Image 1: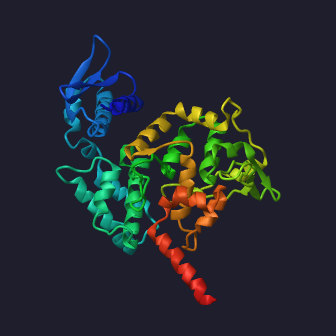
Image 2: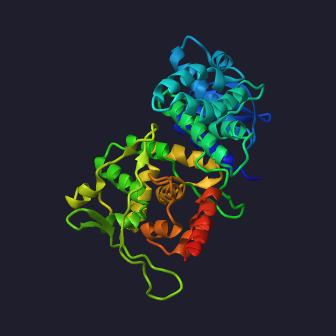
Image 3: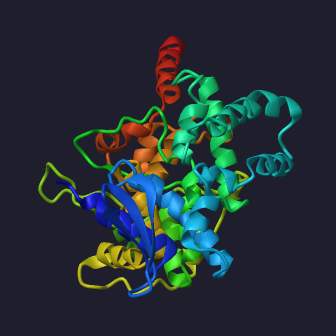
Length: 399
């Protein structure tokens, strides 16, 4: 019997609400316990003690905890659970009010664009929220809201961007729970059933993490890793060239297939993180490398990778992100910053509307095109693949 989910559930509960809250199996249902012996208060929830129900139960308990803490002893646990209600995670937040604020926030979107590229999918999402069994998280909400548009179509792509933007807004600006964040993967990504898939962090998730880090030296590390798609070992091999106008990594990674073969030094190319209003975030990293801004100690036994991993393991937000990745059957690792770089490289168009060639992204990441296609072909959209075919045909015609 696989009981790994029980450990994951309890760790997640501790991470989100702190000590003193626990869950046990009570005749096949999840029983919530609060306090320490001999003063334990408990209530049996309607969620089954199963791997299928624990995430929904966790979301409900987080809201119960908030209600319980705000009551300051005026309400007991049972009352708080009842107040949250059967549709708790929906009723506790005013989606209509959030939408009106979001419209004001999107000042650069004209009436026609709103009507054709934002409003349709948001209306579908609101229909889902009014169902008897409404979605319980961002992934479920997106799945329902996008269901009327064909996968791979340009229209669905526009709608996906719109609903993702709205959900990022309600979480980051209106304090909705993080489980309403949109999924990190797209409909076109192929997830293998036999291999754990590396989780590409979203920009909003990376910003949550960086904002939680008080040490400026460590913030600098993760700003670099996210912006340039670095391996942890790249961090110790950075310098500038051309009077500080280029940033390079001299890290040489062993290549399989030929003894002694290594990767070549490479120039790094930025893919800036974007805020929720799609504005680029420039941390002035090139200049900071040029003036040799101090990094944290990275000479621990086990190398840079171990030092980075050890630091992240002690970070509360990182542990939350691991659970978010696990919910999508993916694995969060320090390479998830690099996976984000690959995803954005393939899916965020350049200013002229065109997409980067896979070879360009592979060169920027410091590996061969073959290695890149094996690792990151799942990030290539159908639109992008069609784009490459058309470009090849055009080149032949021009000749």
